[in-house]
Image 1 (cartoon, rainbow, N blue to C red):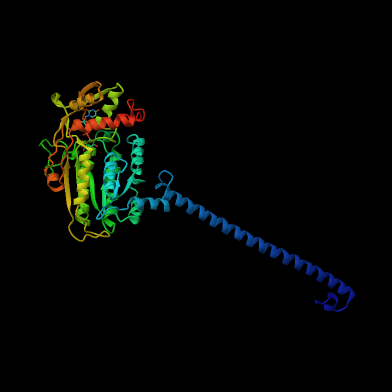
Image 2 (cartoon, rainbow, N blue to C red; image 1 turned 135 degrees about the vertical axis):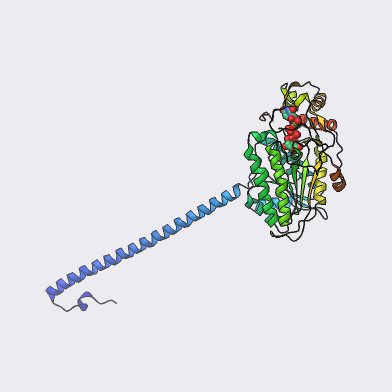
Length: 444
Ligand SMILES: O=C(O)[C@H]1O[C@H](OP(=O)(O)OP(=O)(O)OC[C@H]2O[C@@H](n3ccc(=O)[nH]c3=O)[C@H](O)[C@@H]2O)[C@H](O)[C@@H](O)[C@H]1O
């Protein structure tokens, strides 16, 4: 039991009173003081705790938004770069035959990319697509191609080949044996309108992809789309791989030619296995709306005029139009015969194959003849405006010598232009109907 106040102090009443008073005052002050100090202390503690939790909340928000930023560029159709996303990639990459390939197809929602992805998946290879779904032409067509591929359990990652973190992530998830590189800014004449898009996709994007492939372990073999346009103003026919290709007529052609040189460098320094395919004016179902056969079909059906270019001295332009199924066979044969890359983790261990092939049809057809075939199939007459070819990148003709591809890939085109256009028109009418109401946004 604590002593009473009187027991603690001598009994001098006045003084005691005073002392007691003083003591009581001191005591009360001390208690008040102590009470307010402890309150302050508690307040301080409370504030510190508040600040700490605020800061950690900020950190959480920041890391959360970093996560969202990180994953949003990988999102597609609601799925994001999380576990579900990775699961879709793994499942799409599943190989279902012995000695099957595991292929990353860039530009998988594009015309050739869609067909090649499907062909690979159908024979049991693992396929993962990547596509940036840009609006060079109606993206709804790209989305329809994606839907078609998804119905065959092929997953397309929505992203750009310039996104090196995304590429690294994809290679973390899947040890791709091959890359079928078809993502590109296509179109010869559009290069005058938007030159930088060609640098972005065909140069910078290619280098970003090669950088990833060279440091992958194992390194994949790469098959990629070059172009007949690299022959440029070459007038020696038919065009063969041994010909000079140093007179490009368009920026598109120049970027494809640069791609051939760039891939050569990566083959030489890092031991990447490279196969470049020079495609000759590929056409067919699910094709590109910016190409002549496609836009002519749309305009003829809508009763709108078409512009038919003509060369100097009233000479008709001609192309070695090549049907998509033949091109797909050439791509698949290139993947199957591609030798291995020899390097790993960025170090070359020995020489690797570097190949270039023409994939053409070997029988050029003039543009007016193409129009006649379309008129026959559509049972309608075209309203033709014939004008001299503007100097915007076009070349007067293309004609492939395919003996090298024949010998080494077993490549043999089987579809003539009449047969191929008949199949294209059948697809076109089933997809768009007669009025092309889904694709009116395409302007040429
Ligand atoms: O092999 C390639 O490497 C390239 O093939 C393709 O280019 P091109 O052969 O130029 O095809 P495309 O545009 O269909 O014109 C065909 C013909 O129609 C003429 N043409 C064109 C448009 C028009 O309005 N009028 C016309 O007469 C035109 O003058 C030409 O004579 C791809 O687009 C390209 O991405 C690339 O892959």
